[in-house]
Image (cartoon, rainbow over all chains, first blue to last red; front, side, top):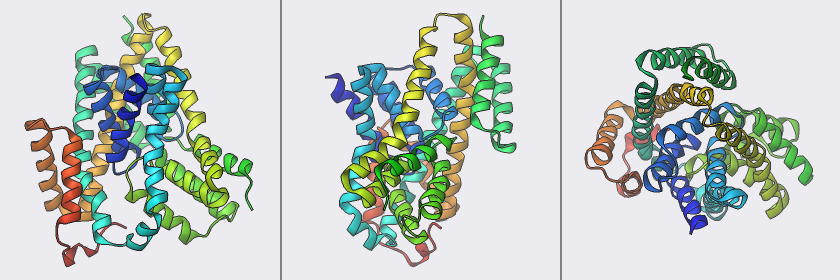
Length: 177
Length: 186
């Protein structure tokens, strides 16, 4: 059943993704692109870019759109529930225990040990995006867009909204043939 | 005492003004909850943030949900989470649905192609961020060992990342604590 799949596709990444929204993105890609085949890598990268261009948490925006695309409004609500509920319930249920052990080495090590794996997943994903862009539009457009957006986002700290808008205009004018 | 309406407005504002992922909204939440409304003190906010970081899943919804819960019980939590996720979720659905409606137009396909490298940069920056945080919390040697281990498991052996993460969680819980690890995360 589609609603169950939507729930699971969001539940699994969100219960394993230590490190907030960013850690969830590559795990989510594994589910919705790799496992269920609902989106192509290109469609997923559009979602990442536009999601980053809008305010608010990234994981919930992606969950809402994925759910909506596959199962309408109810699908969106279920996707959001699968994203938010498990960790919320954990937090409320384990609050007492976690508060007591929050300085414990083992609890802190959980997030620490998972981090390098997430770094690898994110790295692979970035590579896939660049490779797809290279295949779709060639090396020069990929380099220009990559370098300019890197400088704007990282060096000049431009708001991502404007960077995404700029890339949309660039693409609409120069790549739309 | 806070009303549900106030809870909604606080997290709605923090959500709509926090660009670039959830983390940018946290200082905004802190300002509203601790400084402007005095719903809790600095220390409690810090504890909740540390706790939210320890658990998997998005950080913001855990913060807004928990703060809502503490102020107004179950419905406070529902209001806090809803204010954080729904406005931007609706924007996202509208934007992508409109874009998809014109998918066969060449200029829309061009726009879609244009944002792929930008997404690549955003994800690449995050990847580096995770490497850097790893280095800061456990040093280069251990970080590189775990990175190489992850590459072997996922890319060479092709094992699902969920299984790798479960292995790492078990490793964190089962391996004995060493003294020198005490200067962990900030």
